[in-house]
Length: 411
Image 1 (cartoon, one colour):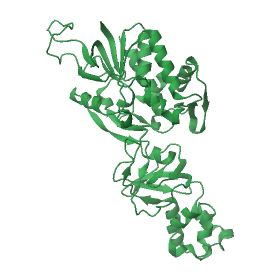
Image 2 (cartoon, helix red, strand yellow):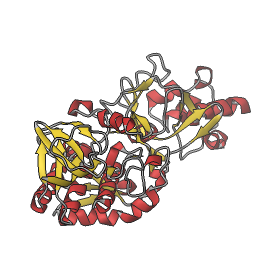
Image 3 (cartoon, one colour):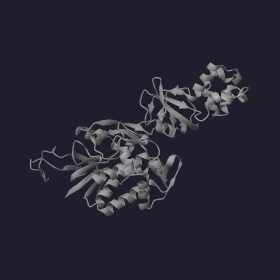
Image 4 (cartoon, helix red, strand yellow):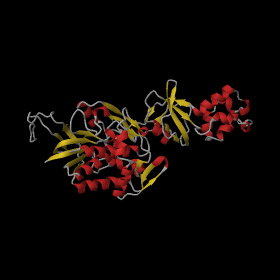
C-alpha cells in the first residue's frame, strides 16, 4: 500500500496532523521511535501540561523569521486549543500570565489523541526509528515503487524498523534535540540540510543559566524573588521579556526560575545578563526619601530584599553608612548595583535540562503551509521548525497549530 502521507514523530504536532489528515480520508502512517506516543508531551508542565496561552502573539516566540506566526495563530487560536481540550474531555484551569494548564496528567492528552488517530484509521509504527528516508527523484533503484514517465521515483520511502513505508507525502514532526535522555537528536534536521534547506543549529532554551564559580552572588542558592532581566551587548541593554517581571531562583550553579528560562530564549554565549532586583521600586526614590535618611544603607536594602542578597549587592564601603550621608555618585552607584547588576554567564545547563530548543529548519525554505520549497510534498511542523516559544504554553500551542496547518496542506 502507498500511503497518502507518512508522518515521522508522534508528539503533539504529529498526532494532530495524523488525526486531521486521516479524518479527511487520507491514508496515514505515523512513525515514532518510542513505544508510546507523546512522550515529551507527557512530561510538559511538570506532567500537567501547559497547553496554550490566552496571550498569543509573535513577541512570545523567537526565531530568525517569525512572520508566519501572525497567520498561523489566527488559523489555530487559543480557543481552538480549548476546543481540542473539550473534544478530548480534558478539564483545564487558567493561571497567571494567561497560562492554561490541564487538570489531568498531560499523558491523558497524548493517549486520547492517539485513540482518535486510531479511530480515524491511522496506521501506527511505534517503537521503530525511521531510517533510510528517501525523497522523490533521489532513489536509483526501481524496487516495487511507482515511477513517473521519466523513470524517476515519485514517492517518499523510509524504513520503520524492518517495515518499508512508501508515501506520496512526508511530514517531519520529530521535534528538536532537547531532552536527549528521551532519545531526542538532530538527525532529521541534518537530513533536511542535505535536501537543500537552510538550517539553524539547535540551541537550548527555557534552560537555567550557569554562572562562574567566583561570581559575586555565589552561595545564595534557594533564594527566590521577582526581578526583571535584560541582555547587554556593548553599551546597549534590552529587556526582551514581554511580561517584564518574573521570578528568579538562585541555584548552586547559577540562576533559574521563570525569568531566567525566558531570558535564555535570547541569551547567547558572550552576552551579559542584567538583573533588576527591585523592578517596581526605584532605588533612587528610596534613597531620596527623607524618612530613610537615618537608616544604614544595608538596613534599607534588607527591608526590600532577602538579607543575604542585600549583603551581597551592597558595596562594602556604603553598607555601614547612613543613607543621608551618601552623595550623588554613591547613590547612583548603589542604584546601578540594584537595578543593573551585570554578569557574564559561563553557559547554560544544556539540552539535557532544556524544556525546548531554538533553531531548526529555516522558514525561508517553507511555504505558509509549511511545505518545502525544494521538495514538493515534504512538510515540517512542530519544534523542528525554527520557531521556539517562551515559557507559558507557547511551544505546545505551536506544535498543535503547525500540525493542523500541515494537515490542511496534505492531499
